[in-house]
Amino acid sequence: MNKTNLKILTFIGLLVLSVWFLLNKTQNTPVTVPENDEVVFDESEIPVEENILSDMLVLNYPTSGEVVTSPLIVTGSARGGWFFEGSFPVVLTDWDGLIIAEGVAQAEGEWMTDEFVPFTAELTYTIPAYGDTGSLILKKANPSGLSENDDAVEITINFR
Image 1 (tube, rainbow, N blue to C red):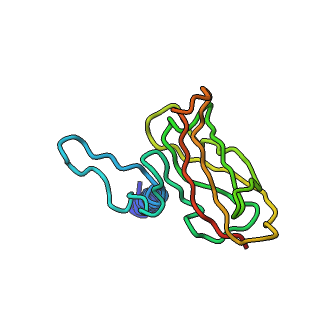
Image 2 (cartoon, rainbow, N blue to C red):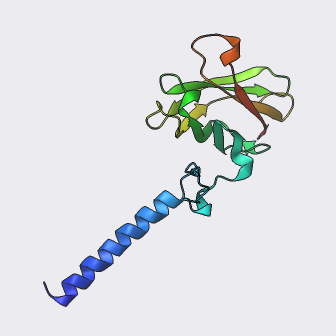
């Protein structure tokens, strides 16, 4: 193999590694700190604090107070315990609590874990005739129906 081919292969290898690094850097990766407090993560992997809704749920879009349009694509990550059979309910209400859209968030990976799993949901709605605010409610899947297993997070959104 001559020097030119070696340089080309090295360049391609570095390009592939760079693309891989950039793709992995932009994902909201959960942070793990071992018991000995040794930091094993890059600070760029920490989700933006406003996106952390609970220890079980991180919402990438929309964020609280954001202006949204239909169809609303909801994205984020939830711990596996938030899902049942890879999904959980999502509800959109108007300013008065009237449900204007319901949907299901689907896991985009193996959901039978204690780790964060990315999800996506799509809600199609008609803008309410009155009021320009509403709520996005993400409900923990609860196949048991027992109230002690209920959980939900809610953010305020604005319609456009």
